[in-house]
Image (tube, rainbow, N blue to C red; front, side, top):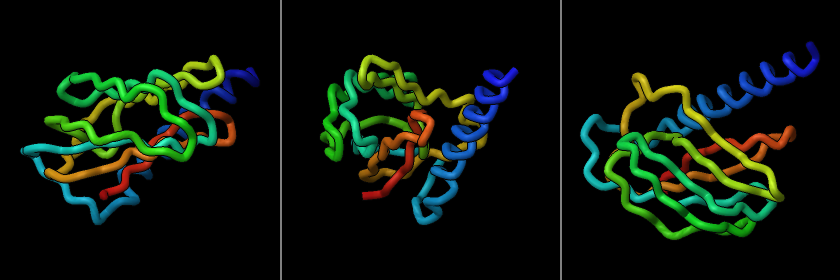
Length: 133
């Protein structure tokens, strides 16, 4: 029972953090028809992330590779992006995943440059925070 409660709490926390990531950045413009969006990643986890993959709403998959702590990747052009995305990475032999449930009602980002800042919760769960560059 304790493990189930911990699991449920973790899911709620991750969902809340993902929701907040989209909600905090109110100055970020959104559109229904984006042109070109440039996304880079910022590793703010404090650990090296290996084989970082991001899947965008159009099902395109970008491998950002290995990212050292406190560094940014280069920008990658995507057709469509939201304030969050599916992210998979490995750190210290552990698989870390951000799994969006759906993008229902979530607007697309406008053309421009953005950073997905990757962070860890105290429980070691990966979460994402959007910055407009």
